[in-house]
Image (tube, rainbow, N blue to C red; front, side):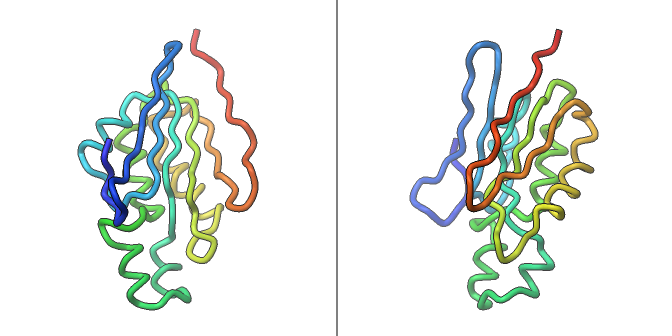
Length: 145
């Protein structure tokens, strides 16, 4: 599915098989209706949580780059990611991975804290923050009975 980003034909995707649905969406500046609909009812999600809005505003990037990152064709903030999670969370969601965190404009604890609050409708979902410079641990989950 297409996502809004300042690149040539960016997209997110959903993989279905063996009774599971896994969604992936990074490099998107806004959550469109199509993005939310595509990621609905997933068993696992990998979603961008690129920046903390305050850290981006007060950080070292030049103004033009701050504006690009914060735009509807840039990257999702922690709050925007949380809003997406609130829209798509459901009781059968088992795992969420926060990905594409900015090393300059975010911290894993900020992204995690904001996402945890957004996952109230998915009490069994494990929450993971992907590392920026090394492989993350595998994500597994139990299938419901």
